[in-house]
Image 1 (cartoon, rainbow, N blue to C red):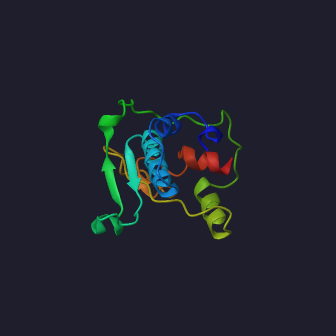
Image 2: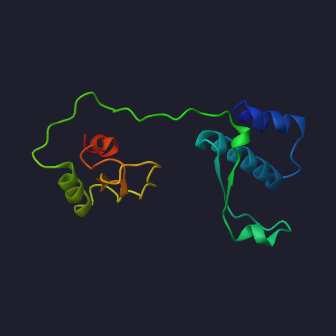
Image 3: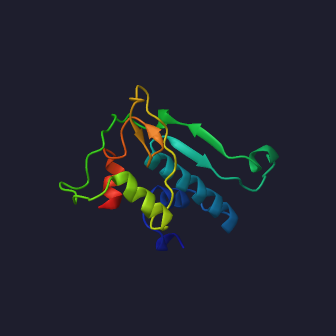
Length: 145
């Protein structure tokens, strides 16, 4: 079975120590997937409830751990526009958002956290937070485009 898997750290670990049964292999694969997700997410890890294995308190709750010490520090990235030109609209982007949501053309976006030092005089109806207006929202512009 090991020869059918894509080469990588998981296969290396299986070659070093074979799994006794499929359940052990599944558990080890889950650990490697979490590690990959942690690296991709920039330090945020969600642990799914598992079978108890003698730890009943772990079963019922999701645990979020910040493991930033495992990853190199990433500089803060500013979001760039996805397109160079946007189609001129006859109505405001806020109105387009309302119509798209009422016609079920797009899912209701999740509420985003308001950044620190955000300009509270500007409110975005798409992100439901402060810092920029709905007309300035790059994510909404990209969705509409």
